[in-house]
Image (tube, rainbow, N blue to C red):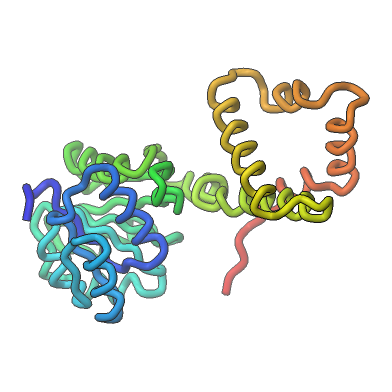
Length: 265
């Protein structure tokens, strides 16, 4: 294994765990410094063959080999996984929970003395090096430990350190954001298909539009509404199409969707 500060265990390598793994390795993390776990040996074997990392179905084994332990498991499984790794996590390690709704206080209460905690909410865009991770180190984290966790997630994109109470407000825009962009992209592609444009060509066009628009949004300090107005000349087809979206309350629907309280199971 590599140096202590570099060793990482991803406990639960499902969709999010694999996205973080892919992005971190592309960002320079040494595969020999990585352990992954999955429920089935078949999945472990597939991941180790694809990424040349260490793998096991035993969470305790993976955790014992890492200084940074990323819990990429659903909230309902978190307590069980923490029980599995109790007594096996290295002294001075940091356990990072990706579970929504699990507070740092809850996490720290379940960890042994000498093990720090942090909360993170990454996005699946980490898999292509454009992740956005909301990070809150716990009070148990030293500055160097918090920096190590930040460095891990920065391998696959940007990291924003936030107060813990901001997770619920910001995560619909960050981790949930790609879904809304894909939803709009799918609708734009379908509109092209309705007008006879092959879907693969429409997808290429829409992808370039989204990429270019994001670059413009990042580079320009004007208000977003002003940028939209620059595209939509008065009396033109663009502004009329935006008016149609307004009549259908698309903007209001987006605001409502992103601000409504999440429903329970």
